[in-house]
Image 1 (cartoon, rainbow, N blue to C red):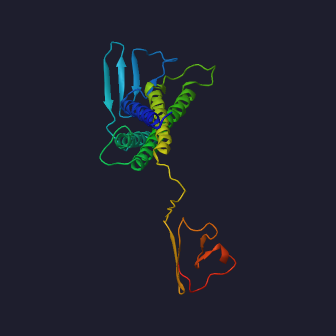
Image 2: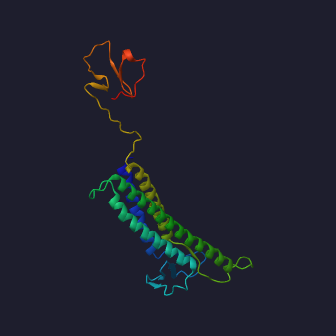
Image 3: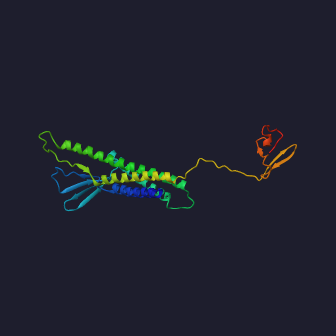
Amino acid sequence: MSVTACQGLGFVISLVGFAGLIAATCMDQWSTQDLYNNPVTAVFNYQGLWRSCVRESSGFTECRGYLTLLGLPGRLQAVRALMIVGIVLGAISILVSIFALKCIRIGGMDDSAKAKMTLTSGIMFIVSGVCAIIGVSVFANMLVTNFWMSTANMYGTMGGMVQTVQTRYTFGSALFVGWVAGGLTLVGGVLMCIACRGLVPEQTNYRAVSYHTSGHNVAYNPKGFKASTGFGSPTKTKKIYDGGAHTEDEGQSHPSKYDYV
């Protein structure tokens, strides 16, 4: 998969997951009334993060918001905070990832800057998805605990007969929407992080070496001027050392400190 396709796919999946987070947070069906062994079927109750609703058999629905903040359970407030944090992080990630898309050129932005922005948006998408999954899971655990506590209070010890009628709540559709949305946001963030590696420009470890050629070699010494070209005698070729210039006839001699190249 190419870098552009991986980045675009991650962006689209994260965008769908972000829309699901908003939908799940605004839905009222986080918990719905359990109708098992419930003799009262004319009224159906369901609750969300922000209000509780009652739907009658005639089709009339009445909702009432939670008018208190301190009176709400602590776990419900934690779920609210987690969902809001997930939405805020998702919104910022979308804005950053739009400018980081490789198919969009803005000014003189190079690939290294786009790679950093892609990695940042991917990490923020992952954190947003994790916040949503944790928030939905905490609410689901709260429902399970309250459900079994209500069940224990409903049934007595005399033959398992129902003594009291209590309203029990089970999983609502918003929980499944939140789980799926959080998973999509998480997967999209991972794809964005993978695409970041392909946007980073490759760096080589080889160093550039420059070579300089000269038409002829010139050696200077106190005794006179010596020069050799490519058209010289084949029997005497010049060799250049660090300390001076010598011919093959002088190969056994060592360069003098008075010789200069």
